[in-house]
Length: 243
Image (cartoon, rainbow, N blue to C red; front, side, top):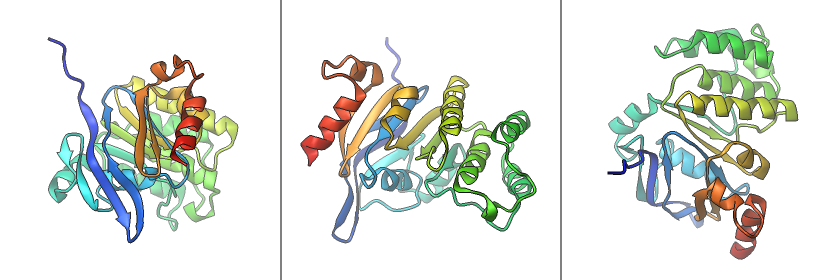
């Protein structure tokens, strides 16, 4: 019998509205373990609101979802799920008054799955100034610090919201390579982006969201084989049809 793929993220009719603004509308999607899922959409399409609902940061207006098989509407269950999830959020805010060294030590103290060798490698690779206060870092450096804090763990699931924001092309390539290495080591990766090239570079599976609604849910290989010409054309066609 064919073994069913384990879903690390599963939503059913997930909806979030802020007053008259409907950020996410009846979203039903699934992200499987053992792969990199690219969550592609324009800025303001509902990607960040979806991720915040999955992590229990904001409450859905309706619908349901599970994270690592645990329902997000149960506070105890979502806390347990988040113990096994590393999250790099869009604004990359950390404790600004700490130094980089203090921030790493503070975060390390919470996790018994911390990988010191990964921490050392990323410190060198990202050229992070360990003695400087986080608040003095550039946006790109804050992004690199947030990635180090996430990638130095052994999470079951890594969720990233626009991970390359503020990075130069060389650093973006380093981040994408890190995602590939993380997935190869057994961690499921779910990352949002509005950059088509980033998703095409590393994703196994692509979910395209437009105006809060899931428009495309398919393996990247199938999209590449599409006679319309690939991910860029599919995405642009999706946006045009939704306009």
